[in-house]
Length: 236
Image (cartoon, one colour):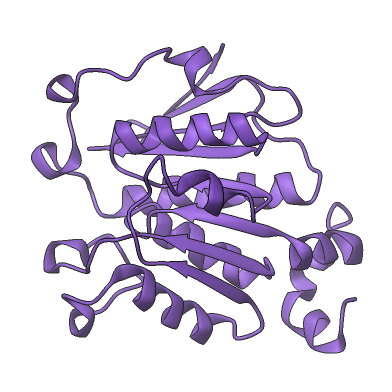
């Protein structure tokens, strides 16, 4: 049930006819798991928390490092060497003490993935490697969980929604993961600090739309080149 406090906090989005009280209740009841509390995970967590998503799961086994701070904006210099998942939880509680957080300060593996995923309605993948990305996808397919996907490199990002209401999954787009040695990554090729904020916000946007029953990307990969502001939608 939506309280007076809920209305005072969320009324700007509740004024949207597409959201309203029923949409806000859906957000309040939703349980969303975010894979990775890094460059993409930070903006996703912030926007889902401030929008009133009732339960947020955070899984990350890494610690905050100094080089994270230019793009992972949940963290401060005093947080260096502290577990990301635990620090992210503290930051989210300051943003919105009304939500519930469930922290998994551990590495996602084939042994624990299904046990963790089963407690959530939606999974958001903010990881930074293909091994985890395919594990997340395959677990979502096996458990019939919708998956919000995003990736970034240099000035470019990708966003997609997989396995929602019968839509296609990651393996329909890329059947097998590439050889890790052939894949560029941010640690070697760099990324502009604002890019994960842009792509992460788009991922959060699709998540909120999915929860509230609004149209989301279906069998499409959204490609955004922020250097030249070129937007491409690929159907698959």
